[in-house]
Amino acid sequence: MDIRHIDLNLLRVFDAMLEHRSVSRAAEAIGLSQPAMSAAVARLRTLFGDALFVRTGSQMQPTPRAVSLAPAVRRVMDTIKGEILQAHTFDPASSERTFTLITPDIGEINFVPKLLARFVQAGPGLNLRTLAMPRHAAAEALESGEAELAIGYFPDLHKAGMFQQLLFRNTFVCIVRSGHPEVGDVLTLKQYLALPHAAVRPGREHLFEEFLQRKGLRRRVLLETSHFTSLLPIIESSDLIATVPRDMANVCVQHADIRMVDVPLKAPTIEVHQFWPRRFHRDAGNMWLRGLVHELFRA
Image (cartoon, rainbow, N blue to C red):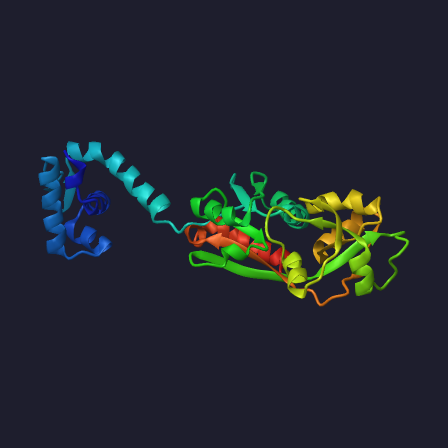
């Protein structure tokens, strides 16, 4: 028997006949007319080369061939009803899924601790994995399924086929060590440009650097580093100044002897979004994760 010639709707007919032992009652149960049901039973008989159901008194009793087929047909029907046709849901309490996020080091500092705490509460089998990559590579990783969500400043992801949700707007501030000899509560533009700076340039364009270039302003960059996290020991142990997003500054202030000072310029804001590809838009697990991210980090 060639599976290409089998109409799977006939299995519904077989299953209904097994349950109701009547052509008319089986037809009513699955929404067919009695003539259509009789025709379907005839097709079943031809398919299996057996009468399958024969009238005995007031009922249509299964033949030995039908009885032997019954467990397999029931398994197929249960699989279709319970696994294929059932609405896809996500239960974090029983899931063992690993979610992969794309976020820079500053995102790992700001987002991962709170996410991890909620993962532990939501389900013992949930796992979290983070990736850091250039912005142009983030789109490819999302589209290929290597990652399913990106959180941060990713201007390259504002494009067709990518969904997005604004979480908050970030501003820039300066950080210096608490005992800095030249920086008080207020920083002038002249001081700012004259002081030695530590600049973070993580292998991609930087919004604040582009802003300074458009303004025609140059500062003395004594140190360039690729990671925001490197700034904690550097700023705390030197007289350098750094300009960073406010959420990063908050982390520095909490974990090192560092304080914040306003930037003496009307600096641009950073829009932090979460992004996900079309392939995950209706995925129940991804929807749960996006909801959690929005709940924890929306402005």
